[in-house]
Amino acid sequence: MVAPTFALRDTVIGAVLVVQEFTLLCAQAIAGLAASRRYIPDIMLQIERVGVGSLFIVILTGLFTGMVLTLQGAIQLEPYGATIYVSRLVSTSVVRELGPVLAALMIAGRVGTGIASELASMQVTDQIDAMRAEGTDPIQKLVTIRLIACILMIPILTILTDGIAMVGGWLIATVTLSIDSYFYWTWALEALLPRDLALGLVKPVVFGFLIAMVGCYTGLRTKGGTVGVGRSTTQSMVTSSILVLGSDFLLTKLSMVWS
Amino acid sequence: MELAGVTLALGGREVLHDVSFRVQRGETKVILGASGSGKTTILKLVLGLTRPDRGSILIDGRDIARLSEQELQRCCRERMAMVFQNAALFDSLTVRENVGYRLWERGTMSDAEIEKIVEESLAFVGLEDVLDKMPAELSGGMRKRVGIARALASGAGVILYDEPTAGLDPINTCLVTRLILKLKAKQVTQIVVTHDLQTAERVANSVLMIQRGRVVFEGTPEALKQSHDPAVHAFIDPDCLSAHEQEAAGLTRPITQPE
Image (cartoon, rainbow over the protein chains, first blue to last red):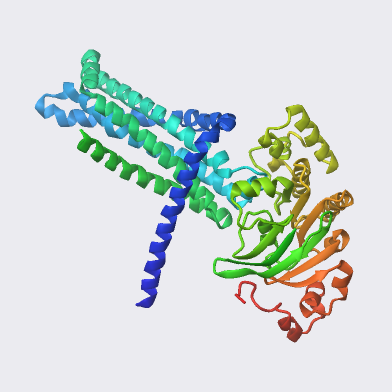
């Protein structure tokens, strides 16, 4: 009886410590924003890695999401003779939920794990300690620049995903469902409210913050050599995905309460 | 530089217990000991990368154990450099960028001045032809020498070495030892952590021996050889001891067992 009690206590203490460390790292990374001007070349490099590097997967994600959504939506609307309104379904679903969430999940898989594995490798090969020994703050040099890149680029990638998804929907609507382009785009744009667009832009900023910080946190606290690097990479993907989905629910709920 | 009564526990195990020693300006001090005895931890403490639980670390009379990262940077790290066991070169930077890293980060010198220092430092270690190579393209010995060049280029008055000859072939061991001797002749203060007795004898002004986190010997290399302390004797010539003496010297206990 005593052993499980101690195990539970240790687990709870461990979880509290993780939250505390993560919060502290976030605070330090945000504090580092003021001094980030000196790392502009590094920021540009990260922007290129996050943005240009993720273009291909978000284009494919958006395209197939829009196409599938149009096909499925049309099946549901057909009995009511409302197939022509399928673009309303596509645009609202994509801009409010699917675009931000799917883009974030794909970027968490590509960028978040990349950040975690890179920093984890640096950690286990003493490069982080070497950086501190050389007089550089690793949080400013490694974490803040990645945070800036993710917060800037993930909203842009999300807008692209949304746009491509609507184009994918338009392709299916015009080619397969014989819906006129004019009607498709008119209903698609008419269905979108300013609130949807605002929420569709706030979400990727939050997701970008989470993906960057989780990747950096899991990378920097890596222990245990190459096995640890693998563990951190997996942990980054799992944690980022859960946090993206959880925060998506919270943001959606908050926006509903607010409106 | 002085460590006074330094005690540190990591992961519930006491890594260092009441360690005290001094290093004079221009001295080359070798810290000897078996793997896992706490030698590297001492270097990390001196550089402020790890904080002691008890005791003080005095540099020019100032205790660095309780300083903030910024204060550590100003009063301590700026004047020190460390050559890590695996060199800890930054993977994403060329040899040129690695060697000049601290100078570029400081931002107080022109590119031409930095280039000159980088080239001179690499010439000092005999590697002037690898400027534009990446660390992954270098052998272990070359990496160590680039690590020494990085320390030299920083203009640090104190250089710390973590196992500088570990894993090197005899030729590279000789090259690295010669570099330490060249710097000793230039009156650079050096702390060399090693378990290699030959290197210790060649480079040391004084030797400190650590066993299971405790200082068991401090004196000249000559005095080390003549020591009658069973722990020292066991380290110098483990084969000459009986099983009983090995046990008395602590050689038969598992290294991770808390004392």
